[in-house]
Length: 145
Image (cartoon, rainbow, N blue to C red; front, side, top):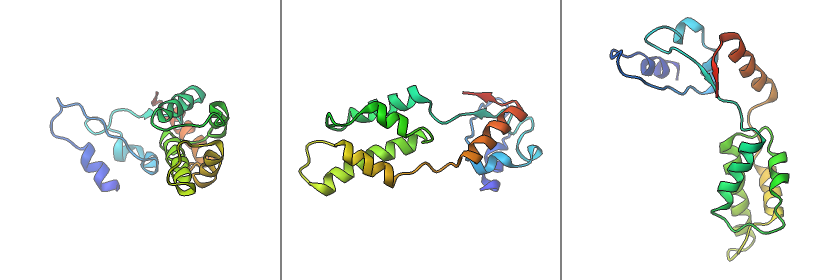
């Protein structure tokens, strides 16, 4: 993975702008391995979604599924505080699958399906690692999105 990241970031065309998104394990490579002119010039820190963003992700997901009135958007937003956008999307997919497993002819996804989905899909980034990302961003002066 490291070799692939280094080869992607090493270019011979200096007039071509590229964006390389590195997964979290590669953030902690020694600075001289990645951060140098012509390879990677800056780090942009993208935090987990805040309350408003989580609400918007759920709202977008709800457009594609029949959600029962028992589903409380604000409850889901609160319960997914440390979830990534992909994990929130996975919660919605899992809730829909729960509804179909219960009844293949299900006409809506209920709060119970979402509760089961939240039990099945857990946030994968521990708080300690999140803090490491924040510290890294502060220490190395990367931009924050």
